[in-house]
Image 1 (spheres, rainbow, N blue to C red):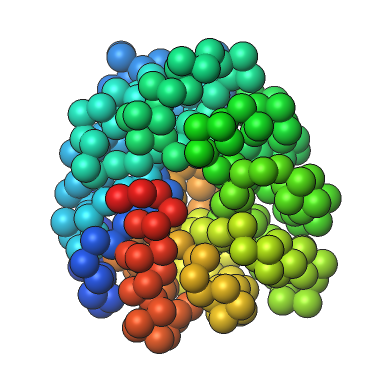
Image 2 (spheres, rainbow, N blue to C red):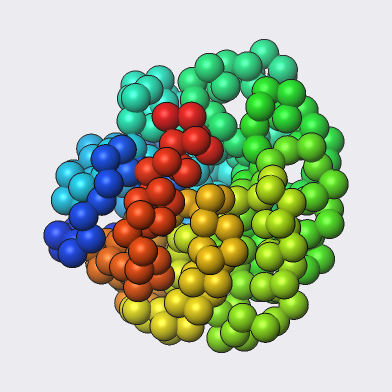
Length: 287
């Protein structure tokens, strides 16, 4: 029986950070209604509903304008909820889909019209219930202008870097490329990401710090990584909350106001911070 996972703190604080106009949260997941959108039979978890209206209320508190829905692994390669939500809220959302390798070309075109901008792939170490690295499907979605959003596991970006750079697609790395933050800034995984950023085709999400460290807020070991990557390629950083923070069972659930305020520490320069949260995100996702 899959576990019912934890979900976000329902009382987000008003952050100290004043978000710039048109600020975007580039990494959220939506769930539900459960009766309409069932979880994949092989999903390791289920989740409480996290609906667009819940997210809009959060955005009002945080001062944000738009969001990028990453179709969650819990739905496997069924992106019906994502497609329906994009159709309903075309100005508020863009999407990242998990698609089948045999998806018809006409369906890729439909998803593109709805606002899907990329396909998510994951390291093989994250399981087979989600899309893993595939140059064949990457080539097909590239024809529709999609990038590849890749979620490594541990430090295995070292093993995937050249394979990802061999693709024609732009690459977006999830959650600080999943680098184990306790390893510091001199580890091979950091060098691999810096090398990827130097190509000009790779973007990094300053998101999900809790995915890179077993510690709780303020995820202190992640700060040196954030500052290094921002200094190296500020024009290709974007910010995401990873709301509603599923699969943190047994750990502290971060308050989303506090989570946004980490950007004050990670990116002390307000002009660069505003660029990351607004211009970079709007360029990457076509808002």
